[in-house]
Length: 420
Image (tube, rainbow, N blue to C red; front, side, top):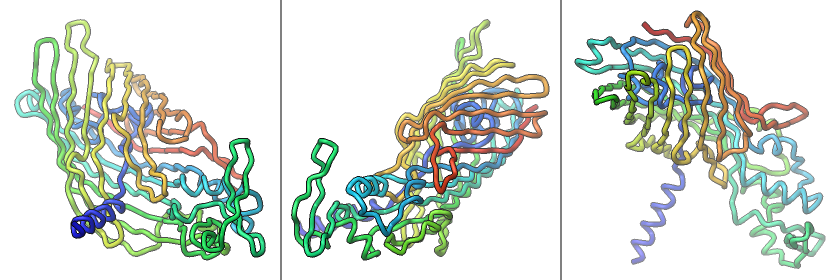
């Protein structure tokens, strides 16, 4: 029995070190339409959002995109903290504790180039094939805390007091011991400078997916199935900086790890399905569902194991020639690459419209991460002649650090795409 308990404990320790990634966003079309792409038949990035989209039409498609995303939660407040006077009042100490348990700063760059080969003959006889290269970098900064060293216990000369909220907006002071202070006090942990730590990590993921999709022609409808097989390589680094009285706020400026980098290779599998309504006078409605990384690829390193858990998303779209309306939603929350005590998750819902004019495409939309405090995210984009495309997403919640105000969520993508 003892051996079983030891094994289960070791197993729990192993899985406690596993992190994950959210669904993400690739390409400019969906980015400008509230992130919707699972049922968007006109997008060249079907190989990313839903491989079943590849057989939605007879067009050969090409697209490229480079992007950068900034996102933060409570790190701006940490950057304003004076660690030497953290115990100046019970309120400031309680506020600091809340920030330490729930925080995140990430800078993400998702870039890709895609090619899809199709025609009416190829689509009907053989199905559609697509090839792509995706290169993404995930830089994260968060605070990892020891939950047993977070109590509001302060020292007053030779006396020690534990501060407890009294439900009336104030605090009651309860006498305690020096042993309790040294074992559980947040203030003492910061004085020692070897307990709570700022974790910076960088995960660079390269993917080479090959996807195939086939259409089953039914009465008044079409059913598309798709699969993508991905060769994946992950390069990872993590570094720790302990919080203490001598901690410098300059450490918050760079989320990229300065530690050594390790490489690990695996493969991933994406599965998708799309249903098309095909009535003579109504043939523009599509319903899509996708399961990405269904095999939960794990990248093993000496410090952490990065697991990309399955991500499930559904979508609906109205795909007319000159007008498109689309909506997507994550079915389940997705874990984010983060090391804070309170697990950070993402669960997006969003949609938008696209006006496909002769020489210009215009896009607009809204999205919301119901697991994060970014506010409503406004999105928009424009494509000129297929050669130049820009999209932007910005959250309505504003953060402030050192007098500078910036949205808590900001995403910018440049690229281009065309089809024939």
